[in-house]
Length: 267
Image 1 (tube, one colour):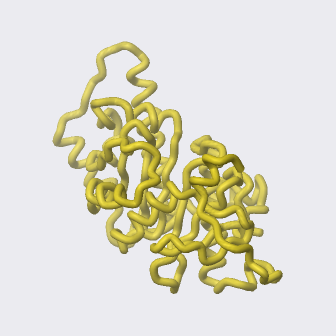
Image 2 (tube, helix red, strand yellow):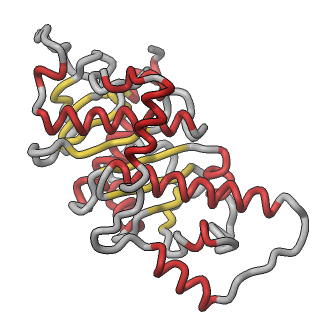
């Protein structure tokens, strides 16, 4: 780890408990860890990761003010249920099975959302090429197809440099408001969900919308835009409501895909 990475890392003394991680956490936390590892693997599978950068977090069931983050130094396709770092809202590393610590920028961004939005269980932040491209477009995300219309009520947060200052948390949550997704200007994407499954679905759909926009604008032809009424109605129909939370139906099938590819995320 170089000097910059040391400045960005949050660490704690290594655990002296030699038992498997599964034996050291509750059954509810273990299940969340499995789903979180699956989410990291899926982000890698669909090409939305950037080496060891970026983060996916989830609340720890039954432990107020705590959440899990990725260890700072593993690739997304190396994530397992046993590897995640448990931190609290105060920035204390409570449990670090790998000893790698976690990324400070990840803590700043994710703690901001978890502290302000009690309806949110999972937060995902990415630096995908399409997401970064749209984040730099003054026009923002355009409602050029129903994939994009899903996110017409989208938040924007101006770039303030690497998210290492705790005072940026106030502005992050102010700009996000009660929305599900936010574009971090000149930076990337941030999505939330009431579950890991819903957050991944939001990311997948938002990423597709960004890819679509980059492709459409590269064609050097005038775009046909839908009517404002059609955009509004499509957005209403695609918003998650009641028992039909987006992504829940797809999640078991996605896990089956991962199990065929490499089931080690469950370890």
